[in-house]
Length: 320
Image (cartoon, rainbow, N blue to C red; front, top):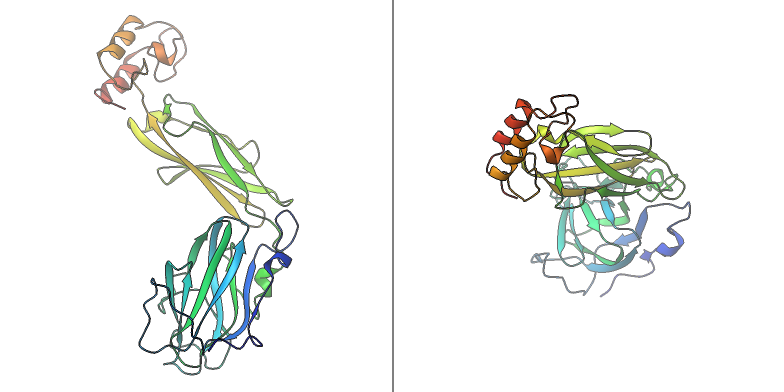
């Protein structure tokens, strides 16, 4: 039979969160559910054990696409009756098992699966409707609250109010304006133009640039634009990533794959004899551009020199 609806309440999320208002960016999904009795069927991704103690499916509307940490407040009757399953959208299954040190008959917050604290339940949810299915696999396990928190640093206490009050910002909006995906970049002063916009009246604390997952620069004041020296990288693809963090520690990121092409003076997609001919024609000339052979960006009377030739030679034969 279905769970007694007198002790199961699905909160009206539209009353808890409205994008654009200074209201909590946290979704409190359920309040007081004893996972014992149900005739619900189980979705395919969770493997049904021989004996179950009830399931129930919750429907929730998510207004913002981001990653959420899943916290479940539960209490267990014994150290051997200490598990339940949580299935998200019929495709992701978490087996929530409390460690042996968990006190009995005491409400406890858990955010990890398999009894392993390193296996944090972190789920990317897109804007729109989603389903959460609780599955009882141990008799007597009870749940009275479940939180989806975009802030992965907050650890709920009590009923979780410490993570559901005072947080008013939607995560910031982050994008890379230039260069665009698959664009060629070159030279010692390539500009990375980005946007970082806080939401709900918040502010941007910092924006960081990483290349191939390695931190390159952090900026704490606008405009959030960066410069990189592409001569530090071998010709070929690199991934640039920008991450913005607001005053409530919400963060979002954007990335693009670009192609370093130092030596491809004619932008033909290859470093070859044509580029060498361009460099030879302008050898020793003053204040030449990159396309004229001044790869290093040198200024003065001898801007095309051995340093440029060395870079061209190191990338000889490169093809986009």
